[in-house]
Length: 173
Image 1 (cartoon, helix red, strand yellow):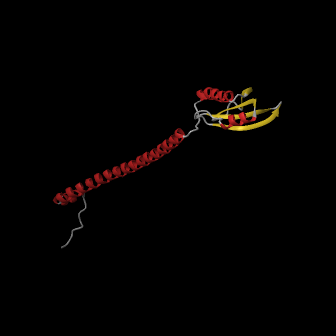
Image 2 (cartoon, rainbow, N blue to C red):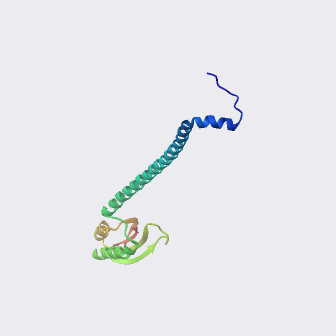
Image 3 (cartoon, rainbow, N blue to C red):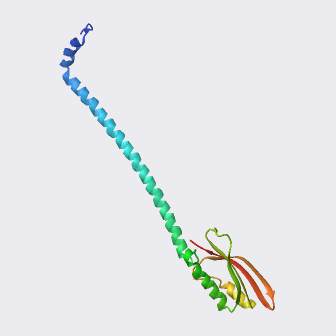
């Protein structure tokens, strides 16, 4: 079979193309299907990536919330924990009642430390009394569930009684 390559104009190609109209329609449909498939596939890939990122964010947030919940439960179940700032006066009252209940004489009490101190307030208290009562007071130096730390303690003998200077911190949330 001999193929004629002497066709020179568009008008001469057009009748040959029209003879193979079914092939052209199939070819056009194939091009359209390839385009639609590529477009749909790219959107599916983008959606899958977005879903994966969203799931990772949800996992991160869930992990953070679980850790926070565990820490919160640990703090709230502790026998000693930081108190709210507005509860400091109640804690101070309990400390004073502890000193008074052990029949000790309060000489002075003042707030110490920097006003910008974080996580609580520090106080200094000076009181006098008999040694066994002072030791008992220090052993019971706590209030309900407030977290209090003794920062400094000095004891001197004056006039047959112990003079105690105590610096402590009440921790706040």
